[in-house]
Length: 229
Image (cartoon, helix red, strand yellow):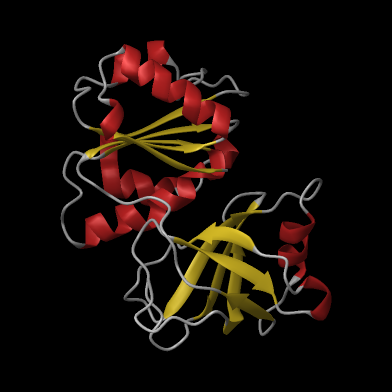
């Protein structure tokens, strides 16, 4: 949370870049004194009269110490007018962000499980752990429709090595399993069910995986879920 809370912080876009065919990185100015904890999010508003009051929550994917803010956002061109409009914005265009708030809080070493753009709360957490040389045995299980949907694949491979495990649901290729993250998959790839589990994706995915983890012996109090992506 910010040391000095402000309801509205006016920022500008510095740079944009597509990471996949439908996931875009936004680098924006950082208000003086603005702070957040890795895993937290904020509400973003497009600074145009017709968009005022239209707030949407997005997770910070950069680190708090950086002199700019970073968001990694899935652009849904068919169903989401807000992200469509974000996609149209240019360098210098304005946004408004509000105070940071809790989404995911890192509580200890464990297994991160993400579906698609549900990876976003974990990006800053894992980057901070790597910077602090505390990545340890943290593991990332990442499910996507196709190989082309894997966000920050090279960075995660470098960061986690063989503890970065991908599975693909709508493309059958030799290098990755062609299945969803289910009880069978978890039993095969997780040896210790006493550790923490952090899950983010669609609500049904999170609910299903939580049930499957508990069936395998995981402690419900160590299963962390939060936002619906």
